[in-house]
Length: 218
View (cartoon, rainbow, N blue to C red):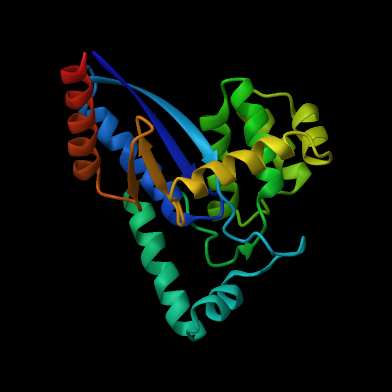
């Protein structure tokens, strides 16, 4: 079986990142037995300059895209429908606030050292889009860490400190330098970038192609 690394550049505040991951899961289900994938989450901040209190999501999106509230709410409802079809909980998507996620990424970097990055990432997607909670709130990070079998006290302590700050900044810079300017970004085998929440069949074809190239190089 071919082995392949996928660096998934993502932000908890990005709805298409949750959708993109679910589509990747579908692709990997199709490829079961063909390709052994190592998935590594990488950080990206959609709202790097957002103050700690955040901003109501529709207000934020209207200002960002220059659209009216009705248009942006309709767009969010359409995203919610796509997410629902994939079994994702986006019930709180319109009620959420735009938040900075730097502290979230720091705790996720720690979770990766405990081999629990994916479970925590998924729990935080649900916290943000399903429950409209601030994913950088230390208490939310504690709650979700406990829910996926991590030490909640440790997660909260990291959120209230500056631990893993250098690692997160370095990773963000690395992938921006590699050409990632929007998320999700799937980097296959450190060589190929797929941008956006592509359909599962597109991911299947791309993964097979890279795996075949690797096999031919051996």
